[in-house]
Length: 201
Image (cartoon, rainbow, N blue to C red; front, side, top):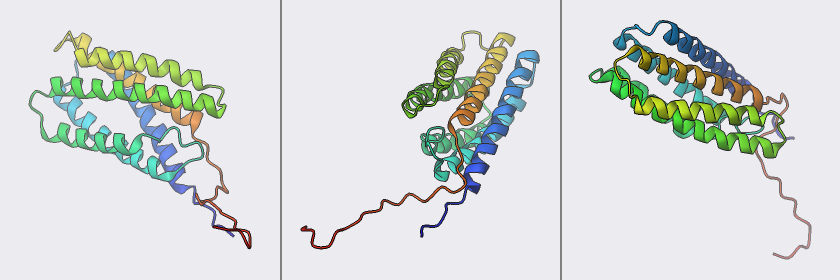
């Protein structure tokens, strides 16, 4: 009899995703309403958030949930977030430019990856796949706008950063709620091969 896989890593990853996504949404709303926040404070907060989110992405990737949709790209993205988070905490010079380019690039790439997640969800028969698709397109567009950041140093730029953060939080929240299904009695990934006596090789 095969052992039942523990669902604790999946639960931890899903809970972490939900909490951090809600925090991103809250941070986005805060930046939209209070664009005069210190750049140094924003950089430190962003660096810590990237490191924590990267850790939960790695946990999610190795948890192997049922559909394997929300976390399928999270090995590379988790490592990337750890690297960017450490860079933000250790390289404060030219912080705003670095933050806008890296955050815009990451959000754009994440939006593109979520387009594939939406298509995969459609093939799995998940009815709300189009919600992920629409949010991914919007998030990707905002990521490109932040990467170009034509209004550098202004309150408009900070509000744009807030919009990108809010969109990324919503995208991650919707993706994990729609596609991550936790099955209590899920079995390990073992391919069973039955051999018949007398079968020729």
